Each structure stands twice: as structure tokens, then as C-alpha cells.
Image (cartoon, rainbow, N blue to C red; front, side, top):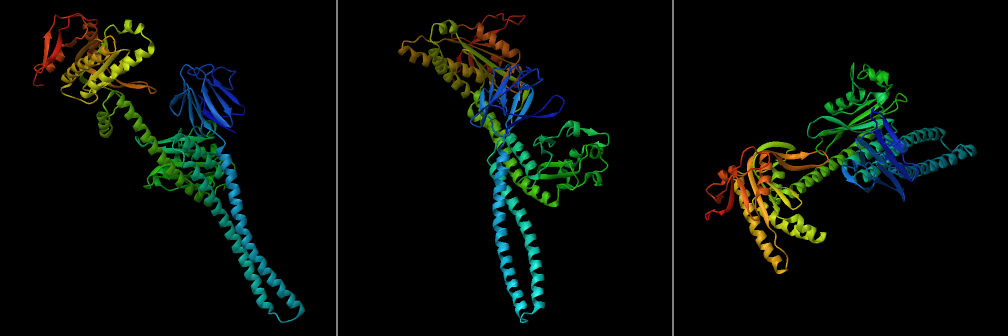
Length: 566
């Protein structure tokens, strides 16, 4: 049976079984899972079961349904998926672990039965021989009774050794079989959150533990963070990382000690263990048996810990359990490290793809290699270019939607080529308009000249496109362009769910006003842009114009072209 696991606003963990073919999630009380979250819609999402598979579907919610950070309309759920509705995070856990345990039990029993049969066949043969000789004793005095007793004693020792060997064989078989099945499961999962949930549940199953958690060291901050936990109810443990009057909780204290020393910890009776008996949480929360082991990378660096405990009885875990969990975590750590690497590569590719939306591919790669990507904004001196198609709205109203899209795609492709030739940053398309930044995020001292060159190139390429369209009987397009230079705040601006690289500032507003003031085919620049490019461009000084947001008239220039030696 599948479960949804989540922590409510009070920090209490809940496990919601998916027992029917449909489970409704929302803020309304008549949902199967009613959430007290103002960002959750009244009827937010539903989970349906189809042919033993689980699907989640958004029900037209206001803020959307996210699975592993991606907004989804309908998607197949897999083990360990993280579902976010509003501000509530749900973890989907299916019954894969139960199926694996049944397979393990069958495999272990089969192996042990074969070994035991072989050993006891040998014992049976020895007993047959002793029985024959005892019968000989009864019939005659030809057998040496002393020697026969020695053989019986030796046979007893052999039986004891076989029993010990069988116990060790059973342990080894169980470990090997379990690790084999665990390896098959975790080494094919590359989504980190899903993998951590799977490892946690497997650890609890194979150790028959009551509670547990996995903590990983944040690769950027170096802090130890809880990534997944099971049954760590705050009513019992005051949360994993909450401090006590006498220090930190036992959970945090043990995890920190394992990280610092690199040595695993096994305590069979925490209340009488001198390392922990003074901690109030040991007595208050009745913690007895605990195992905590480090997770080590391929280079043997500690990347986190796995912790399991049991409050039922003392001596619940043994040295054998510790040995087994160490072997288990060796496999788990490698899988986690591989998943972290895979996720890092995926994130880098996502960033690269986003960069290539507004930067030439070469510049995007350069930024990735040099690590120049920064979240947030920073002040920089740039040139801003705005362009649009004159009379586009009225023209588009008379055309079929498909033809409008084809026209814009052809137009934008040529304009983008000219922008990227000058290493401009394509900020956004706005209907038929284009906003471009020159000088950020890659700085250029000649950003004003680059913007003007791009504008001239755009105008020339449009002439070529119009000539082709004229052959097909299509009307030409006419563009107007405005360029302004100044200090802006540029960077990745937005929210955690959606960020775009853009610029904010007076130069942005002025460039937009100049584009609106330009006539068809004109390139208008402000006084600052003209000063930065003076001597290398041909431009006519125009009468100052008034633009919205400015109390005084603005001096503008019309770009005619470039000097011949540029």
C-alpha cells in the first residue's frame, strides 16, 4: 500500500495511506487529505490508482502542483517523489520495499536450506557408522570402546562447529542477499530525494528499527542538514535539531559525534551509556538502542550519517547489526554521491539552457566555466536596446494566428542573430518587441557601440527579409529602435519558482520611451550613448524631446550608420 508522508504546521509527522482508487487533496474539509495551508486551493489535486500505478493530477489550483520541483498537470508518481501543494511538502512512498523484503526472505531461505542439508548429510553418515560399531560392541568385544567415545566427543564438537558455521553462513547469506537486492534498487535511482526516501525505508526494514533519519553535509555551507526522517514525532523528540537546556538532542549529538570522529556509534542501553546518560532526552524520550554510522564517498570523505533507534527494549541492536548497517551504508553512500553528481549535472544543464535563451552559446559556456553566475541583482553600467514593429497590432488583427506566429518566428530569428553577434543579452520578447542588454552579465567597455551595431544590423537584415517577402506578395515590416545607456540593477530577478535575467533602472525606461518616440526605420539614442560611441558612428543631432517620467526635454540623436573605418 502506498503512503503520503508530510509534516504539519506544528511539526507533527503524518502518514496518509492511499487505500482507494482516488485520494483528494485540498483545503476543504471534505477532501480525503485536508490541509490547513492558505496557499492550497479548496480542491487542489487528486491521486488516482490505475493498474497498480499512482498518478497525481492538478485540479486547476491557483498556485499549481509541483513534483520534484517541476509544475505538473498530471504525472506518474514514483517512489520517494516530493509533492508540493501550496507550502506543504508531501513524500510519496509506495510498497516497493515490502516486495523486496519478500524476495530477500525467499532467497535467504533457499540458500540456507541447501547448506544445512549438505552439512547434516555428513552428520547422518557419521552417526550411521557409529551405530554400526555400537551394534558390533553388543555382538562382540572386538571394538575399542574408548576410541568410539572419542569419536562421539569429536562428533559433538563437529556439530557445534557446524551450528556456528551455519549461523555465520545464515548471517552472511542474509547480508549478501539483502545488499544485492538493495544495490539493484538504489543504484538505478538518480533523483536524490527519491533515493534518500528509498534508502531510509530500506534501512528501517532491514534493521527492524522504529525510527530513523538521514543527514547530509551541505556541499556549499558545510552544515549538517536533515534530508529525510521517519517517525521522529516532535512530541517524542522535540524535533531533530532542537536544543535542550542540557545541550542538544541525542539525535543531533550522536550525528555530530559521528561526523566529527568518523566512527560509528552503537549503544545498546543509552540510559546507562556514559556517553549519553546525562542527556535529558535519553530519559525523557525513553531511548534505548541506537546505531548511527557515517556515509562515506568514494574518496572516503564523510558526506552524512544514517541514524536508527529503538525505544522498545535494551540491547535491541548488536555488533552484527552495526556491521550490517555499515555494509549497507557503503552501498547507499555511493548511490547518494552518484545521485548528487547527477543532480548537479542536471542543474548545470538547466542553467546552461536558461542562459542560452538570452546569451550566445559561446558566452553561456564561458559563464558556466568561469562560474560567473550570481543570483540576485548588481549595479552595472550598460546600454539598453528596445525595438518593435510599427503598426504590428493592427496588422496582426487581420491575419490568421498561424501566419502571425510564422512571421514573428522568422523576424525574431534574424534579429536575435544580430544581437548575439554583438554579444548582447536577450532579455525578453514582448509581443513584437525585443529588450536587449549590452554589457551585462558579460561586461564590455564598448557596450554602447555594440548596441548601435546590433541596431544597424537588425535594420539591414530586416531589409533582406522584406525583399524575400515582397517576392511572395507580403507587406514589409518596419521597425523602430531606441537605445539608452546608464546604471541599472541587472541579475536574476523573480521568485524561487521563476527567475529571469533582466535589468531595472532609468536607462531601461528611457530606452523604451525612445523606441516609442522613433519613427519607422529610425534608431534613436540618448546623449550618454552618443558620447560613449562618438567618433565611430554617424548620427544626426535632433531637437530635444519630452518623454514620460522626465521633467526636462531629452537630447536625442538619430543613428545614420558607422564611420567607414569601424
